[in-house]
Image (cartoon, rainbow, N blue to C red; front, side, top):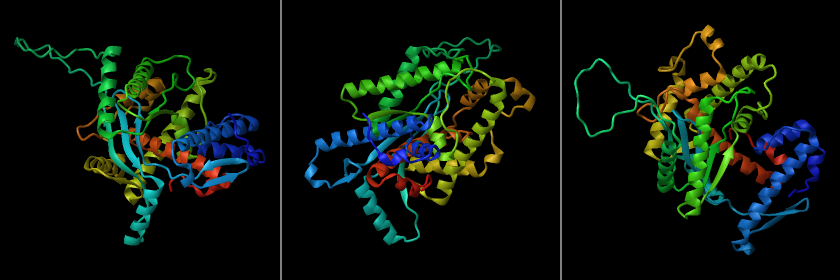
Length: 390
């Protein structure tokens, strides 16, 4: 299904790419391809809201018409987002509320009257943590000669990545969160199959992809059994990065031509984008904007993040590798090292990018949905007034 939007036809390719990035749509391709893709994505929004409206009293909603399309000007209901940044050693997740438009407007009016200089906050964090799905097995000592009889099974000397074990991890993790928080939307970071266009598929990538698939299976089972009512979305990390940093565009898993030549450039850009996202969340917390913490657990996580962000030059616990060593090892091995950084007892980690990624993924997805509605209701000019940090 495609929605005809005549105003898109007159735009240049650069402008179409900007609209696509602001709406979480793939920005690759020629002008006709990109125009069609944007129109198809917007048509899905219209179809979704029309289906929702059929179950409600349509007479109480005003109707707007623009360019031959008719959409309901309905208030958005409160959404509770569970955003997951995939990992094995470091799986970061954030749960936060986006109030309904009517509730948010009333709250902002009251807040403005009480504190005129207070900046608006759009998202209320309920939980923000980083966990280890599978911890390293404990090291055993061969020097002890004492024989101990115990009923506790011995800790395995080698970590197991059997599907049966990870299925239990997936079920325990999601069933606990669904029961405690009842999210309306679950966002899962979409995993790639290759790194930097390499032809090889690394073992660690397979492990994370396996666990990702299990999360979808558990959520589908809970939905079919009536134990949860929500929607699951896979989110491309490249689209999230493009939205917040204004660059990056779409990537792919193409051939491995010039792989070594491109690797250093990609790693430099990746590190720069990581730092930019970590700093963005740090500025939000420091300036007390955009986010608020609605639970003690969330406040503690935010305090830890802010403390480490301000002192991030004195990173502890991370691996510092000599340049000669880093040049020998591949990018995927470096990512596995990052995965192996241990989660600390307070729920934080020595590296901040996982926590920043899960939060920014959720906020970006909500902004994409809002921007699509802005285009449908007020035209593409409305995106110019919507800033990424606002």
